[in-house]
Image (cartoon, rainbow, N blue to C red; front, side, top):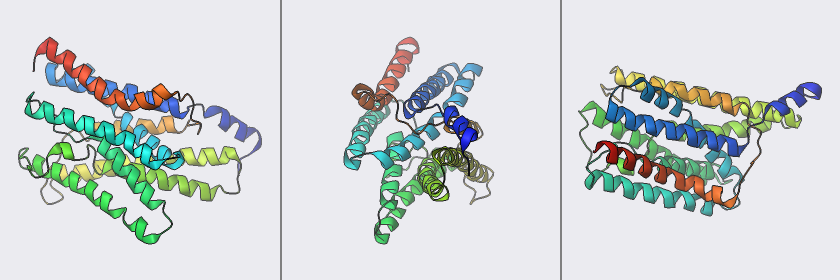
Amino acid sequence: MLNGRTGDKLVKAAILSSFILKIAAIVTMTLDHLGLLMYDYFFHTDVALIFRDVGRIALPLFCFMVAEGVTYTKSFKKYIARMAIIAAAVLAAQIFMEYVMKYSLRQGNIFFDLIVGAVIIKLLSDKKIYIRLLALLPALFSVACYFAFAYEEAFGHRSLDFFPYFLRLQYPFYSTLMITAFFLSKKLAEKLTAKSGESAKRLVSNVFAALVVVIATLINFGVEYAFDHGVINGFSTASDYYQQNFAMLAGVLLLFYSGKRGYNAKWFKYGQYLYYPLHILALFGIFTLAFGY
């Protein structure tokens, strides 16, 4: 058990609120998308690759915030509804870019990742065993999305018209694995520190969260490596899975999570969701005007 001066030091070191983690996720996500467009237009520039490396930090932070959000929200329906509205907007934008602009992102809808992860947590939180077992359905959907991308990659980006990319998760199964693991690790930390002080609870919870990022990323790397080298049925997946290992840096930030909400004005509460489609449109618009498409 940790207490006294050691505990006080741990509490003081945990200075990153939920608000700060969200800002870090938004900033790194923006750099990632900026790097993606730079990579597309300027080919293999070092700056673009660095932006994309830094951008790997965003996903674990968003996944962690979803796990926290579902745990503490007063209305799960409203929480899901906010993400569903933006998911619909992103879907509409993807369809427009695919069929009107003739620009294919070839990636799923990240808000589907967050929604599926949130639903899994909600189902696992239920006291009834048959409700908890229903969590297998969204989990299987996540896996199906992964195999759809793997199949297309293996056969020269042959499109599965009956299951287009914009109806899939963007990071299957990686995102749902992290969201679910964040939730379960928090429950485990609470049990292990039930008789400990707040400092010990915060330390164990943060260490477990950091470990989730590391382990989930290593599992993702292992599966991608196996596919890419034909270990599993000769399938192949995207070749940038090495880059995804930079996501483990997000674990460092989670070690300093204070467990507090921080700044949470109404404009930010809703603006954080709107930012995603707006910044995509802004970046794509700027690059299109400057360089064409």
